[in-house]
Length: 132
Image (cartoon, rainbow, N blue to C red; front, side):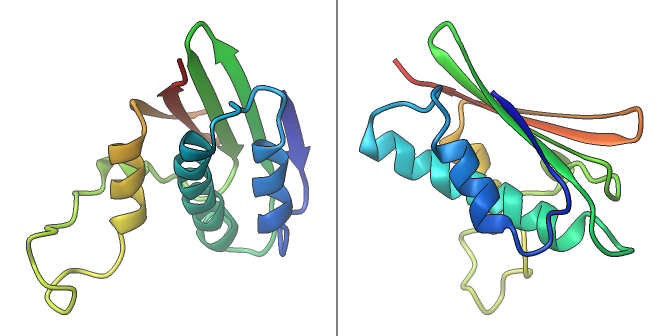
């Protein structure tokens, strides 16, 4: 499944529900909870930070390949590879930790693999999770 949503302003919930209601989505509440957390993190980052000059689009998709679920995000916003951001030092107290980065860290922990590519003016992020 692939869906283009344009414009994205104010549509975080719609984007998240589009992915969560995909026919590719697994029927496992515990796994769905983890997937939703990661989807919410990525969608909120794109909606809130990708487009400096206002609104833009996002293309989202899901695909089952063998025993893995691939969740994809594509936008033409500011180039940003979230996988290059250093992981937060979770041994520090919340007051001493740098602001930001915890959501992406969580996604890296919950997913089996994440891939990023910037190609043809587009950010492309793929999250991969074994589902069986």
